[in-house]
Length: 395
Image (cartoon, rainbow, N blue to C red):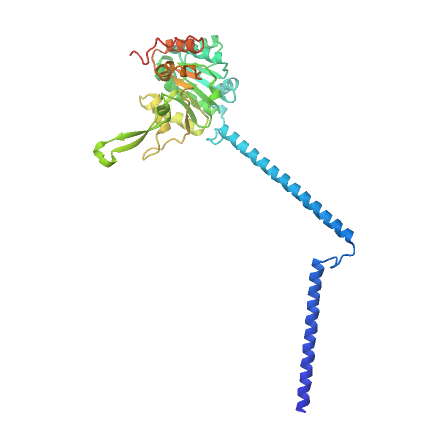
């Protein structure tokens, strides 16, 4: 009996094993079929060769079309990159890397706002302050401006006589409303005293959103200065320097022998900016510069040009927060001071052929005759007009 039971169990196990193999074979077959159906949906052997040929032809056409589209896309991307590069260069030329301009506020001075709207070109203009003490120089100043063809300029008349003189000569003029703090200096002050007023008066121009090319009246214009500005800084100023080193800066080595090995100390030197001719943009640092200079001049007896340069150049240090204004030095051969002219240029045959943009008679007290001589030399072509004058002053 035991033998029959064992034999029966063996048969059951064998049948079960065979059943499992059959199930496994079916599962594998189904999987293989699915794989073949996925990769070969039309069977292993095509009975319609023309259709297959058409399919490959279409595929070739799609590949060729795709290659053309890729080439066109690359060319478009190259064109876009070139366009963006050109635009970036243009933005740099426009000075958009600098501090942003303020939002104009016409409520500051509605009357001045109306005048500036009529006089300025592209929100820029030349501005000069004048009283009757400089009337003769003012006439040479505005006559040279008219000769060059500049229309965007304005005289801030500091007394009635200058206002009437400008109106009679068809010169744009603006006379401020009465201000005791300004009028006492404006009507009787000398050249330096009047020069200090500009830092108070110019503030309104900047608040109204205008860039100003501030000009003293002891200047002769030979070209339009607006064609020679970079406009990439808050302040762009002419220099009192007379060569590359003094105008643009140099490493000045201080020698102290007692220090032995460390006897040489390197210092940076640059000659000051001239506060009688500078271009200033309507930015917050520019307005702060005017406020700082005007504030100091109201509290202490100081030369406005010295204060102007200290505010621009002195860095922050303990007890003092420096001004965050960007600055550029003008080309000293184009925006020329009278030291460069009478000490260097008039003695050099090649330099005499250059035509400056402006000439500022800032180094010499005999301003009027030298201004007239500059006109004779550069405008009327009188080659010896500059010769009678000494390099420096007689006193």
